[in-house]
Amino acid sequence: MDIEQRIAHLERSNRHLRIGLVILTIAITFGIVGQGTPGDVIKAKEFQVVNDDGQVLVRLAGLWSERKGGEFGFVRTYREDGKPTGTVPQ
Image (cartoon, rainbow, N blue to C red; front, side, top):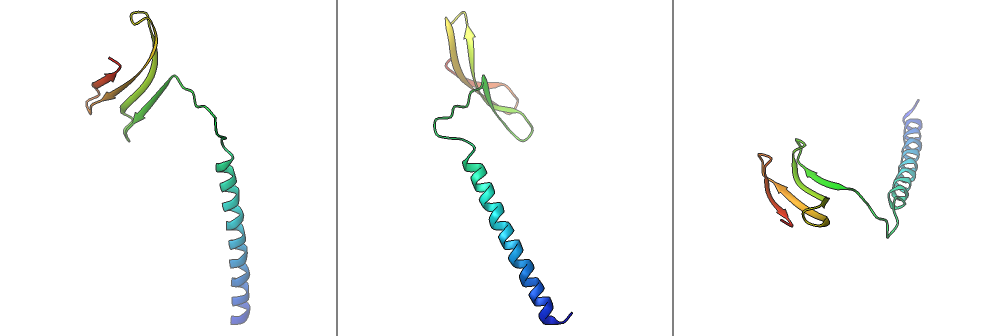
C-alpha cells in the first residue's frame, strides 16, 4: 500500500466519521427537544436538594395538617449536621 492509497483510505474514513457524527448530533438534538412540550407539568409529593454525600440540604414538600387546618407546602433548609435551619412557612 503506497502513501496515496493510505491517504485516500484515511480521507474516506474521516468522511464516514463526520457523517456519523452529524447524524448522531441531529438524533440527540431531536431527542432532547422532543422530550417535552410547553405546558408539561412535573408533579411530586416532595423535592430534595442533596449534596454529593446524599445529605439533604433543602426539602420542598406538601403536607396535610389537622392542626393547621388543611394542606400546605413548605421549604426547609438543613445545616451540615443535618439539623433544620429554618422552615417556610413556620
